[in-house]
Image (cartoon, rainbow, N blue to C red; front, side):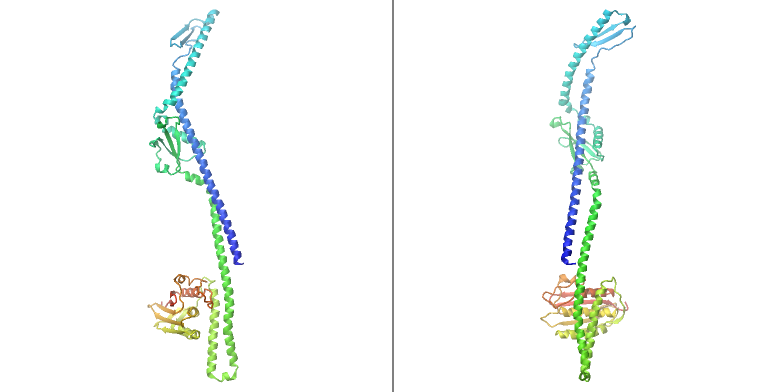
Length: 505
């Protein structure tokens, strides 16, 4: 798959995920806002109903007082209604005169005329009562006006009893579908608390979720009182309405993370594939040179005059030996590639004399260094050079470091490589390889041991590599229970230090 295709798919999927997350977040925000609006509307309706109920209770209070006064005048009433005992009436006139009328005896024996007179008296009494009712109706209108103008003179504690207000709030909030614990306080026009519930907190009330309703809106402005109400668990209540959206939001984030990880793996795999292809192409070229040299040496051996010269035979055998080692070195590089596909390298550990192995490597590598007009010196002063390592991989580690010194040499100065061994303690051997090459920048020092990382060499196009050499070196040194560090300065050179445990350790 082309890199452009991967990038196109990445952009499309990224835009899709961003759009999906935007829709989900927007929907959740709208749900929260709508739930807040519904909650606020329900609370406001409940508070208005409470205020209205308190006004009705106060009106009822004044009307009951007036009705008690109205009932002080007495309508005609029958005191004794048996036929033998007679019947009695009591009444009060509009002028305030009270009177009683009693008829004794058997009413059934009364003459029709007397009965007619009694009926006329009853009609007169009814007319009197009707007039009295109309008069008292006028008084009721005056009483209502008194309620509106003088009711605020009563203490607010009597007009809106705390227990009654609490009961009304619970009832009205339940009618509006709100069954949450609440706290409230009644305050006057300057904000002074008249009374409050035990859990009421002024700080919590000022947190932005406070509801306020005027009690008795018809009172004078200087006698106004208000009820302040808030719900401690409001946030949890609102959160419950969007809780069902959280799993889908989490799943979307998981998919996004998996997608990003997949894209990263795709780019890594593509880079690895390109590196392997380049490696194969370069290795084919690298194999051609030693094979051609060996082939040429073999042809020279077929020449009789060459076979008669011991010096020439020695030279040709030396060339064949060097080129064979070079081929082996290239093959080992192929093996390095496979090592990174395994969690742990397979090592054949044995006792190795570091001084001897390094001396052989220096002897072999001298020809390559001198071809570039450089020199390599060794100072193998370790008194105890026996280390417990894999000889083949240890040799490859040293070859890699020396090969890097040649690759990153300076053009304006002859190459100078120095390799040393010394015992830094009773348990460890230090091997240092220093050169006077182009050096490494500080920002690159932390990354040079990363797989596939290559330091920029500017316009140097002759430096080939795959970013595996130093990663391989670090991996093998650590597998052999050692450590590697690097010191470098631009245009002054680089120094690698390997610390490996001695056999006795």
